[in-house]
Image 1: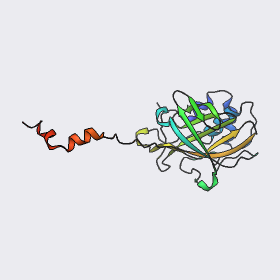
Image 2 (image 1 turned 90 degrees about the vertical axis):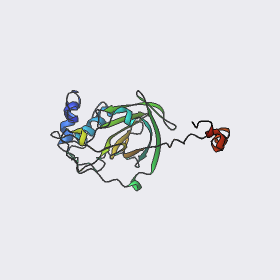
Image 3 (image 1 turned 45 degrees about the horizontal axis):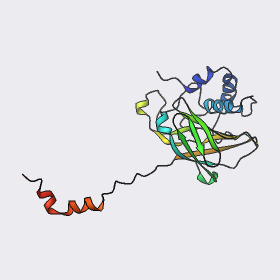
Image 4 (image 1 turned 180 degrees about the horizontal axis):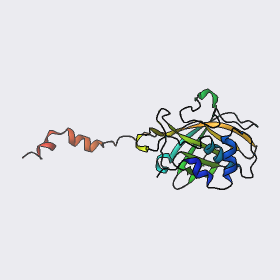
Length: 214
C-alpha cells in the first residue's frame, strides 16, 4: 500500500508542526534541527491530500551525480515551489540560475562523497526524494517525474526519471545560508570489449572457420 509522503512525515512527531506551517504557506519557521527542517519543507510542499507521481528506488538513485547549485543567500527560499505545492505545477528549470557544480558519488548503503566536501551520507525519503549530507551542506530534492500523470497511487503508470531531480533545496549550516539546486546523474559509457590482435587475426583467417564445418 502506497502511503502519502506527508502522512509519513506527520508520524515523526517534531515534523508535524513544520508540516502544517509550510502547508499553510509559512516560509520561515525556527527549528532546533536544520536537516530535519529541510526534510519537512520538502514533504510539506506536497499537498496533504495528494502524493507525487514518482517512484524511485535506492539502487536507481545510487551512482555519480552532478549537483548544480544556485548562489547562496541568507534568506530561506521556496525555490519556486508554491505552498502547498502541486505535482503538476513544478518550478521550471533554467540552468543559468545554477552556476556552481558539485560532483557527488552516492554509494550503497548510504555513503556520499565529493572531492570538495569529503565523505558524508545520504538517504532516501520514501520513494520520492533523497537527502544528502556533505560537510556542512544539506541537500534535498524530489526525483524528476512527468507532471501530466495523476498521482493516484498506480506506480506502474508513473513516468519517473530517477537520473534527475526537480528543483530542490540546500543549506550550508556553517554559513547559515540557503540555496536551490538541481541534480543530474552522470551516465558513464561502458566501452565495448576489444578483441585482441591475435584473436582478430584468427577470425580473419578462412582456415579457422573451416575447422568447424561438417
